[in-house]
Image 1: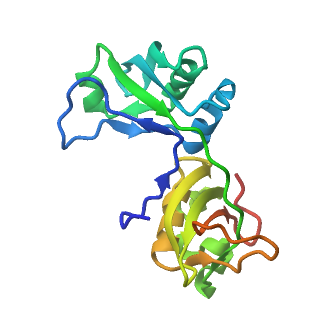
Image 2: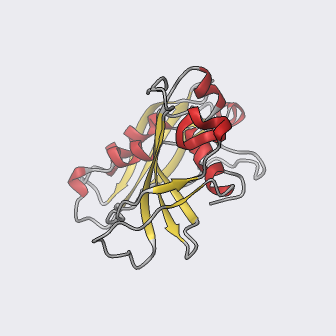
Length: 227
C-alpha cells in the first residue's frame, strides 16, 4: 500500500516502456490493462510454461488508444503469448503527448508471468459512522461520483495481514465497474484504518506469507446502488 492511496495492480505481466525514448519525467501510459483483462488474456495453451514474452508494434490514435497492433516476436513461439499481447493492447492508452511523439508507431515488450496459487479468502471488518450509515461498509469513503449516480461496485485484492490485523502491501486483482473510483476508495479506507482484517476463518490454515484475499462490496443499505 502506498501513501498515494493507490492500490498496486497485481498484474501477471510485466510491461516495459516503448522502444522510443521518452522524457524521464513524463508518463507514457494514461491507462494500463485491468487485472481481470490480464488474467483473461493469459494463454490457456501456456499452462505448464514458466512464463513468456512478446514484443508488439501498435499505432496510437490521437486519443492514445492503440490500433493496428501486430506481433514482432514471441518467446517461446507457438504458445499464444503474441496473440495474448495483442489482446491486451486494447487495455492500454498512451498520454496525448506520448501518442503524438509516437504517432508513426510504438514497439514494446510484454513479459508474462504465470499466476500463482490463490490465497485463502478472509472477511474484512470496517469502522462505522452514523452520519454515513446509508453508504454501507464504505461509509464516508464511498466514491462521490458513484454515490451521485447510485452506482455500486466491488473490489478484490490480496493483502498481507499484520499482527494487529492492519492490511499491508495490498495488490489489486479486480475492480468492477472500472473508472468509478472504487479501487482508490478502498486504498483510502485501508490507509485511514477504516478497513482491516476480520477474524481468520475457522478450519483454514493461516498462509505462511500472511497473504489473504479480500472482497469489498460497495452497496448502500437501501439497495439503491447497484452495478
